[in-house]
Image (cartoon, rainbow, N blue to C red; front, top):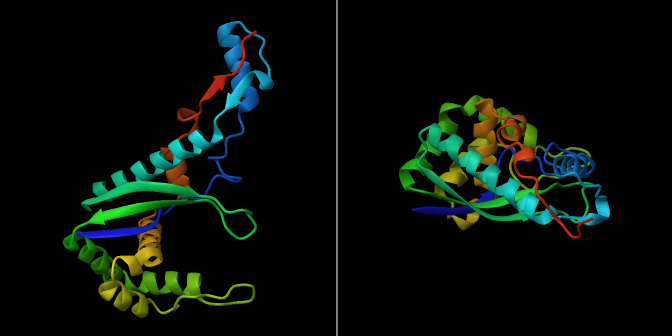
Length: 196
């Protein structure tokens, strides 16, 4: 059994994305219309942390369902949502635990080898150092495959997430597909602090 902690692919974060909750005014207006009230923003408490956690878990479920639909027997467990202090160079990241058997792990390795030209291009584009970016990883896809085969679960933290990013990218599944599958409108919630 392989147990690998890594990040969730296809998630572009909350800041300035479809997942960012910014519907307070329309939700208050809808609430007032439905309940015959005249409450204002100060009458509500919006639980942004709970909202973000529910969206994150829904994204994890969606990615797990997609992988299982592609015949990967893999379990994903939500660990936490990690947000940067500032959004200049990084964005939110959903951290998960991947649980899979060695057979499934080998299927991912086989997928890389079967799609080696696309994987080479993907790794070279993503991990080649350039002005303003110093890569800490090799930009040679063969190094990644070799390391992937022999690495311990703990050593695969970044590598496995990147492999999955490549898999979804190569299969044509993007962050837009994930955001369509997990509509934030289904996860909004707020509590009234006071009533009129």
